[in-house]
Image (cartoon, rainbow, N blue to C red; front, side, top):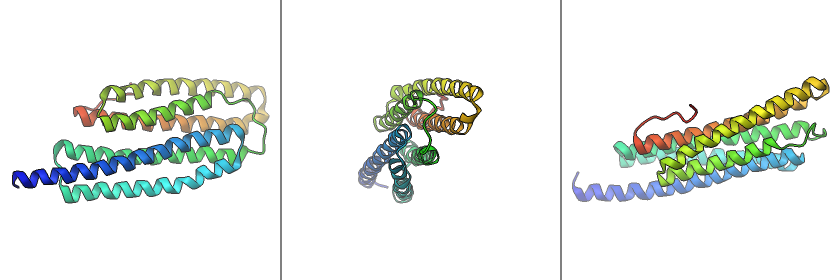
Length: 225
């Protein structure tokens, strides 16, 4: 391949990757919105908002499929090598993580549909705090990818530790409530699952951050240590 052909292919590659990053960021914003709306629905026991989160999951699934197909197209037509190939592969993995986050937000919305006719056994405080942190982690992980920023990616892992601590608090508090009043067991279990799904969302955001670090440095780093 001549230098001019290589340069032309590189320009096309960068254009396609720029478009893919835009679609990735759009998908990420939809996921962040789903997380926020699922918790808002849970707090307010808003069945319509919960159903809107569930319905929006199809749009996110479609985006995942679109981005994956375009990633494969870039690999097939541009034949990227070395770091350029890692960049595409990282993006491919990231959309899968984002899709799983959206599934967890949908699961939280379904919890709302199950318990919306019941008064909440306690005001929700730590679960919304977990959700805010999880949304922050998603945004930072995606920003770290776009900027190729290792320090920002590492900070995602630090927030994950805080999410884990909050889930521990939720677990202990709800366990105490269940022991004191067995009639609360069903709803408390649902709320525990909501906390667990938020914890899993933060884990997927951490996965993305780890992929960013590998992309930039070529080294695998476990941010959950």
